[in-house]
Image (tube, rainbow, N blue to C red; front, side, top):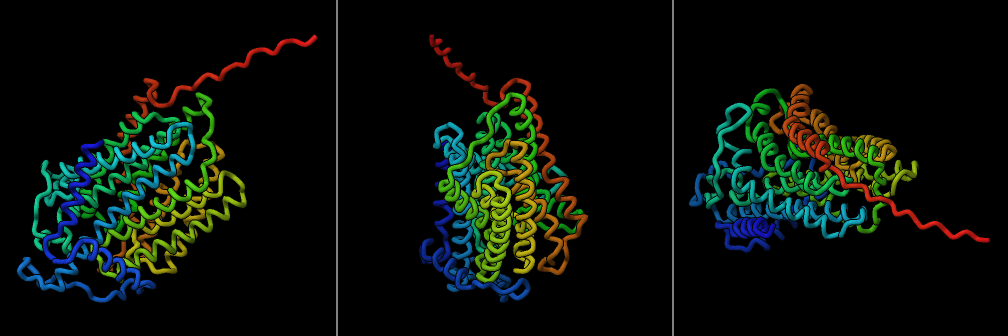
Length: 458
C-alpha cells in the first residue's frame, strides 16, 4: 500500500507541475472554482456561451498568454475533481466505520487506502491504456503496458489536460468502485474475499467496459447511446455487482444466523455521507473535462437539485416508516439522486433534475425499506443507491438531447444496461461460489458463552 501511495503522490506532483502558465496550481484552481461558483445560477443547457477557443491551436507556440491561463485552469480543475473523488472514497470508509460492526475503525480506512493505491498503480501501467487504446478491435482492444510521460497538452487533445491528470482522474473512478465493493467487508464478508472481487473488477473488467463506450468501442458504435458521467459504466456497473453480493451474503447470513447490522453512529455517518456526496460531485463535474464556468456550474446545480429532492423524499419516507435510522435514508437518498442524473447531467434542465430526483428518492427509499425488512447484507446500500440510481440515470438520459442534437434512444440505453456489468458479474459470481464452497466467504459465527447455572436457594 505504501508503494501504491508513492505512485499516487508522484502522479499528483506531475499533474500540478503544468508546463504552460507562469501562475501556480493553487492560483489557477482558486480562480477556476471562483468563476464556477459565480456562474451559479447557471444557464440552461443550450444557452452556454461559446468557449471553444482551441480550434486554431495546433502547438504550444500558438498559445497566447490568456489561453495558457485557461488551459492551466482546465488542468487544475480536473486535479481538484480527482481530489474530491478521493475524499468520497474516504467518506465511504467513514460511513463504514460508523456502522460500528465490532472491528477497529481504522480497518475501513486501510481498505479504502489500499483500493486507491491499487487503482492508481494498475491504471498507470495498463488500465488507462486498455480503456482508451486509440485503436479499437471488437471486445478486446489493442493496448500496451506503459507509463505516462510528458506529452504536449495541446497535442494531447483534451483542452489542456495533461496525460498525467487524465490518468489520475480515470484512476479515481476505479478507486471509487473498489472502495464501494470492499464496503461489504463489514457485512459478514471477509476482507480477503472482498478484495478477490474488487481487484479484478477495477483493474481488468472496468477498463475493458470503458473502452467499449468512452474508448469509442463497439457499444459506442452500435446504437445511439449516451453516458455523460458514468450512470451505466460506473454506477450501474458497481451497483449490479453489489446487488449480487448482497443477495448471496444475505443467504449466508440467514443460514448462519448472523446478527443484523447495528444502527450507525449518526454524526460520523453524516460526516461520511457529506464526503461521499463530494465524491459524486467530483465524478459529475469533472466529466466535462473543461473548466468552462457555465457548463460546470450547470452540472453541479443539476446534481445538487436532484440530490436535494431525492434526499428530502427518502428522509420523509424513512421518518414515516420508522424503519432503520433517519440518516441511512437521508444519505441513500442524496447519493441516489446525485447518481440518477449522472447519465446526462450536462443536458438536464432544473425541472428535469427535480423530477428525476423526486422519483429517485421514492424508488430508493421504498427499495431500502423492503431490503431492511429482509436484513439485506449491504451496509452502505451500494446496490440501492448506485444500482437503482444508475438504472434510473441510464433511461433518464433519453429525456434530454445531447449537444449535437441526437437523442439517446431507448434501445441504445438498453444495450448499456445489459452489457456493461456482465463481465464484472461473472467475476463476482465465480469468487462468491469459490468463497462460499470453501467457507472463505463469511466470518465464522462466534459461539455465545453459556452463563453458569445459578445456585439453588433453599
